[in-house]
Image (tube, rainbow, N blue to C red; front, side, top):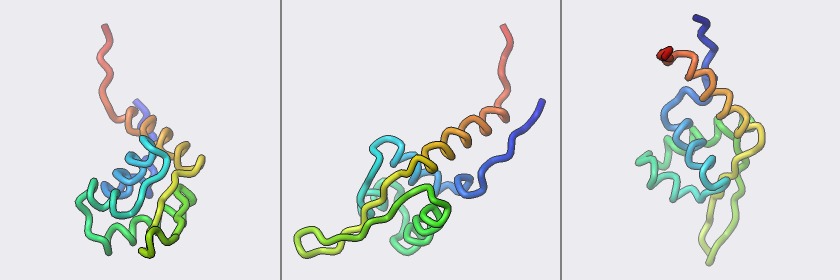
Length: 98
C-alpha cells in the first residue's frame, strides 16, 4: 500500500473547512464563512491569508452599504488542490475487495 502526501495547507481543519465551503459555492463573504466554521475572526483571517498566499483563494475587499466586506473566491489552483487532497486522503482508507 502506498500512502500519498497530504497537502499541509489543506490538512488544517479550518483551512479545509474554508475550501470545502468554497467548493460548494465558489465564493463567500467572510462573516458567512466565520458563522459556518465557528471560527474567531482573528483565526479565520490568519487561515484565509495562508490560503491566499498559497494561491488557493482570492480575497476581495469592498464596501457594501457603507460597510467593509471581504469576499473569498476559490481559484482553479485551490480547486485542483482540494481534489488532489481528497485523492491523497483516499489512499489512507482501506478498500474492501468483493
